Image (tube, rainbow, N blue to C red; front, side):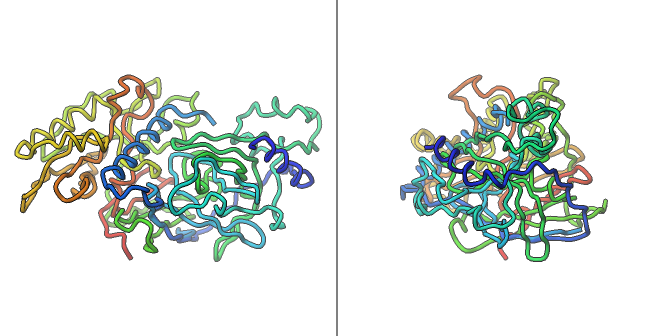
Length: 466
């Protein structure tokens, strides 16, 4: 199915292939705001424990992918919508005339791609509230600005590296006029994969049009009911292509999953070193490893301490910063639901919660069913005392979480579980890569800012509901 669809796609576009390169737009002091919503189709089970288990499993799968990836002044404001699928979505418009498509916001990858052509096919996409045959798709033949990216287009090397010409067998090294298309891409995500061709297309905002934007036209996917808007550090990401100086978002509480409630994703272009009032900042830093392009895409921050109930948990230093081999450190990821910690970090954190909540019995049956631990019985308790949880970063910035960002009810109101994950069942299988992946569940009702120009991450608690 995938191969035949690719052949069909190539035949449809063969006259559109282009090898011309385009220059990134010159930054102007502008802003765009886009609606941002949680994205998660309702879990088929009415059992909240099974729902928590689906979150936990998805978070662990995402962690496996991020840790061992398979290589491959304000400008705009858009709304962000929450879904019980586990992520947050935005809508972007491509083409002439514009076609509006939903995308999952992902700071852990860089390519922007959409379901493409009337032949788009998605396997294992039978999620509740999603009809695989009616997934919104971009139709290239309806756009007058669609061009296939050619093999000699420099943007092709953004995805396939500097040696991509070795894969362009129909292109003469001495010829500048080669009509061969850039090779087919295949991207692996924690939850699935996608295959397609690279297009040069117009990205349309209400007051700004971006020509020659590199975007993936996927015609076959597995478990990907929506396109992905890559906001990572790669050249092909939306922030890089638009020349953003920073972007910010405020993630709605998960209780607004699958509703019309939304918050804002704000894109900024233009220069400025001033800090946003009220934010705490910590610097970004880059992974020192050079032979893993995926690690270079992540947003690393330096975590100094994890503080539970006022007590700093002892964490081996080698896990707090990436070493010469690229392993270790903390990344911020909008595509992960529950925060992941490698076992040497998670275990002392979990033990500290168990110690400080010794007056509550463990709900071991719920732990086994949900995939989360520790879980505590709070039945018949009029009040529950949750230890505070604070993450302290380089520079002194402290992220103090409200308890609803790190404990969740399992089933009725009688059991709560810590919403931080590890992979203790696999042992050393998840060694390597980032040691901590800070997920979106822990970012609920926080305004966060990715200041790309000044290489810093800012945050403050905020009610994200408009």
